[in-house]
Image 1 (tube, rainbow, N blue to C red):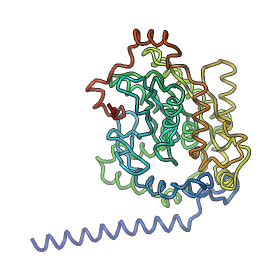
Image 2 (image 1 turned 90 degrees about the vertical axis):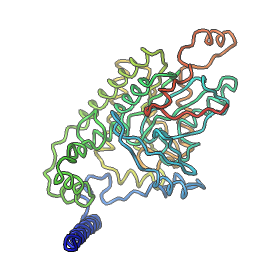
Image 3 (image 1 turned 30 degrees about the vertical axis):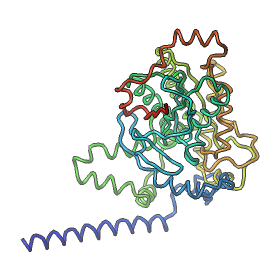
Image 4 (image 1 turned 45 degrees about the vertical axis):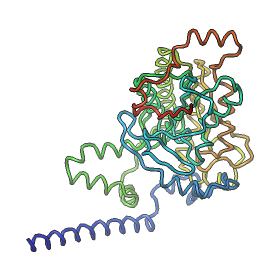
Length: 411
């Protein structure tokens, strides 16, 4: 028995030292091996500032504490169909409920049968960079409360970091399948992640980092494959492999951009059909991004310089392709790609995330274009009360469904 325990201890020591060596080698590769993509940057050798110190947050008294908390709240859990949701988290500025949805500001007067607005999208909607009360859904909830105090509305945040429009579509379908209360309005804010995912994979219509999932598929059944999948995800190893890889055959930027827009509009049509079938109003928003901004701050210029040329060009080409598609076949779509084009103040902390004031500007731009869901006079209010079918209180099944936020009502 002693020999067995001694052998086990030796094996454990060897495994530990091996893992430690792998981590050290990876760090050395990151430090000393230049990224093979440096030559593909807008300005070779440029380095973007970290989000937490970008000048967009220069006047935010909470930024240091927020970004420290943001690091703690990055955990995710597996979720069928959409791949992931945040793990539950409780903090001072970031709170994620038991189902993985971020909390936000709500009108305290909104009861169980109040109309609901669901907002879908990626990290811009989730609220990367700002406390709960400043997220886009929170800003929209405040605008609804300010517009009509007599008819409270609840705005729910379905956004999740990294989501592309296809994941928004699936998240919407899954939420409706829960049953219970349907929203009066759904808002989809997408575009930038669709472009970035296509830049990564040279293929439109798929989620981000899909190549990693292909590598990891069924790896749990093969220990060697599992170890290889983990090892190949190390940053230094990815640098090393990229240096030895042949240059990929890239599609012309314009062709890939058109493919991105075709895929995005196909998802828009599917979401519209699903909403129409359930009597739900819709709003589709093509989100703003840094590459369209003309007056850049010091840090915004550094972010652009450190971006991949192909990514920047693909995003701008997708904007043009979308505009052309909408001109040829008009749709009810809010194109806000250039919302901050003439904004002189720093707003972006990377190519897509904006500060709290930027989110307020975005919320107001979206709110001005939203279809009416609140009664405009007593007669229409009475008619709405007689005919509404979507604002029944949620069923027990719906309240326990992981594809819906946990809604807490203050009576």
